[in-house]
Amino acid sequence: MQRPLSRLLAVCAATAALSAWAQSPGLPSGLQGAATPSGGGTLARVNGVAIPAARAEQMVRELTGQGRPDNAQLRQLVRDELVNREIMAQAATRQGLDKSAEVVSQLDNLRQQLLVRAYIQEHFRKNPVADSEVRAEYDKIRKELGEREFKARHILVKGEDEAKAIITRLKSGAKFEELAKQSEDPGSKNNGGDLDWARPANYVPEFARALSALKKGETTDAPVKTQFGFHVIRLDDVRDAKLPSIDEARPQLTDRLQRQKLDRLLADLRKGAKIE
Image (cartoon, rainbow, N blue to C red; front, side, top):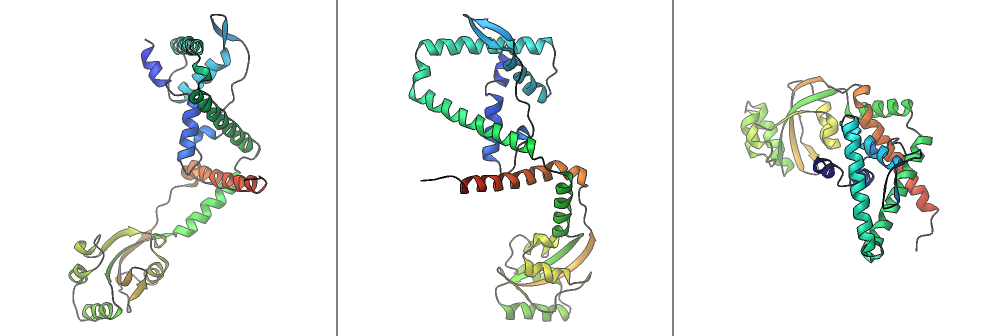
């Protein structure tokens, strides 16, 4: 009965949340206002050592947050798990493992991580991301991405004269899809130069400007130079871009803004720190 829960609780939830934060460019939901255990009381005693009830409540919150139902069975499993941990911890202490250099170092690292987590939680509790900031970020990104999507084809060659020759052949009736076979772009050359649907923001600026200036069915009259070489571009179709609503994008936008705020906070803290 205890083994499944032991696997679920093998890693402390706080440590797992911090590991995710450290590895991710965004701020995880675990740092967005997670409650701090509070309250007194004793869950159980093991050889006279009290296990705080708050420790169990924290574990229950973590598990119910993962979809486990909060019921008597879960709470009994949590109690058994914490008792087992205390028994093992006491055994380790009797062997002097709590004083080993490796354990002391790991405990120090965990303490630091928990302090960082608490600091970030408190900062965003006092300085939450405002709805106006989310809306401004949504409008900014929507503007950057553009309101339309383009279905384009291109032929990429190394030289400008080669690109001009391709344009001349197209004007004489050559098929774009056939000429695309000589393209330097391996991802589209065997598909008639097809780039599929994309917003101009997906391309380098020079390509995006030339594409946006075309009308449906048009091909560029002159080669378009980019860092990759010279392009001949044809616009096959245009449609309105499908963007998520602000409510659908709100969690991601909030994470993005929190990440930005956290970066600025850390930069300010580093300015005031004496680093040798």
